Amino acid sequence: MTEFDTLLRGGRVIDPMTGYDGIADIGVRDGRIIAIAPHIDPAATARDVTDVSGQIVIAGMIDTHAHIYQHVTGRFGLEADLVGVRSGVTTLVDQGGPSCMTIGGFRHFIAEPSDSRVLCFLSAYLVGGLEGHLYPELYGPGQTNIEHTVRAARENRDLVRGIKAHAEIGGVSRWGLEVIRIGKEIAREAGVPLYIHLGQLWPMPDDAPDIEPDEIVRELVPIMEEGDVLAHPFTRHPGGFISTETGQVHPVVWAALERGVTVDVGHGSHFSFEMARTVIDAGIHPYTLGADMHGYNVRLPKGGSDDVRESNPFFGVAPFNLTNAMSKLLALGVGMEEVIATVTSNPARMLRMEDEIGSLQVDREADISVLDLHEGQFSMTDNSRFTMQTERMFMPAFCLRAGKRFEADSPLIPPLS
Image (cartoon, rainbow, N blue to C red; front, side):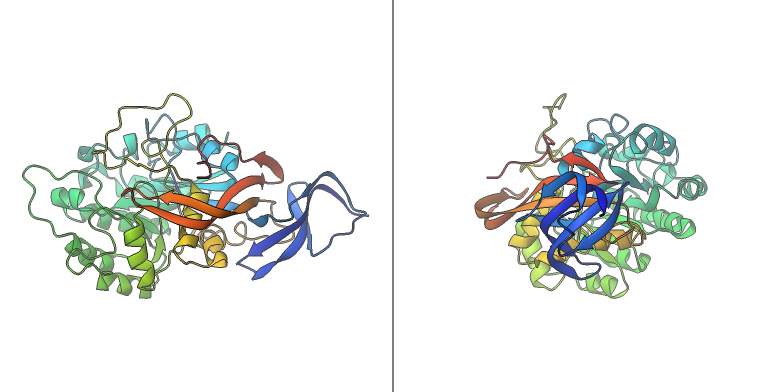
């Protein structure tokens, strides 16, 4: 008779990496999955047996766009486990918080003590994500160091899975695309992908030249290579996938996708239903789905700042999290398995960790997310204040991280509405 630490019975198991979609039991022992079967012997014993019938069981969710360098990045950084395991998410990828100068602190104070698995895309800038890149004067090409950043990426390869940089009109008006070229050189030498922010971030300086957002995209695409990531395809800000000239997907975006560049939603303060509908209707679906939650676009459970004005580029008007973003993709017509792939198998491949995470397989570490899919009438609002009605809404129930159970009790989870 098999003995388990945890036995999940009767859930709908969906694993895009293996193609499995069916009712199954999952047995966990010593932090690893040791059995997956339609029916595990009813006589099997377990310290914790949980009936998950009616729920969806998937590989531990991976949030590809987190901001969790708490305190060091000021109001921007959230507590990792509130975004992670206490929201049903087992792996977090901080986008651009740590730099070559602060990666040691990120390891010691964030990655090591967190119950969530914590990774990062290292900032191309020396200062990293201080105050969420609020001060543009800190982010020019003179505030980078290729040699030191490459070395930090190589020496911290267990944490550093890529490099983060920005391509938007506020920065281009100051420095052109030189920082992106520097970021690409760092990424290429470190052997990791480059993650590129699209959509306006910094205000235009008073003496700024006329910058055409479409031209930024035209100049950017030739810099990118297979495996690089374009973020914020559905942004409401200028300089995204949608041409300001035609109102359609910019032609050179197709060239980037053909080259093997992938697309990460990066919901955050950017998400627009109108832009998402245009991009998806054109045939471009996101590869990965990052929530992009931070201290300016979610209300902190304590100690939050109330001085965020709507003019702030990071300001968000609608509560959201990773499962809320998944629900928006469902409402936009993206299929169930494809939505689940954006938070499991696809990000695992993007991180080059598909042999470790992103799939439910025997002998793998037991990272498992259990979701409720509610049916009814729900409202979801984007950051342009447009509200869309949907009949299905994901909510996290709990997760196992290396076999340890965490309830989805984060105060950052938006309520059903």
